[in-house]
Amino acid sequence: MSKPNIKMEDGIFISSSEEETGLIARGLLESVAGTREDSALVIALEGKLGAGKTRFAQGIARHLQINRNITSPTFVLMKKYDIAGKIFSRRIKTFYHLDCYRINSSKEILDIGWQNIIADPANIVLVEWSEKIRDLLPQNVVKITIKEKNENEREIIIKNLYGQK
Image (cartoon, rainbow, N blue to C red):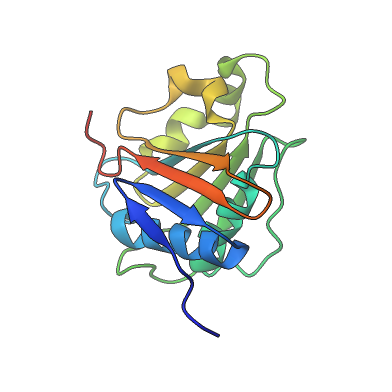
């Protein structure tokens, strides 16, 4: 298998396959996992239905060595996955995967312990449809927008990688 052709210009990646999307997810984790000393790493995913948000989440989970089938938690809002061992030389204990597609108010996620989840630096939190809870996202959120360029290509735009304004 040849190395995928991933292009990056100013935080913009072009992915032509699920494998490439997974490699972009891994690169993101290698860059920022464990860099948050006082809070969780929060990854906010935006994009139209079918753009590839769940595929990106699956790539993150795979590289966190979560050996379970990762599906979008659309009907349950959140899924929690325990992580065994050290990941990227840091103790990351839990991966939270949220899907806010069906919520009507950002306040709905407060009932699931949102503030405690994002306060723990041992957590990685990935939120699909994050635009629905924009007012509750931490300042140091990593924002990822996925756009469908055509049937086979996705443009993945990563902003605020290191939590800067």
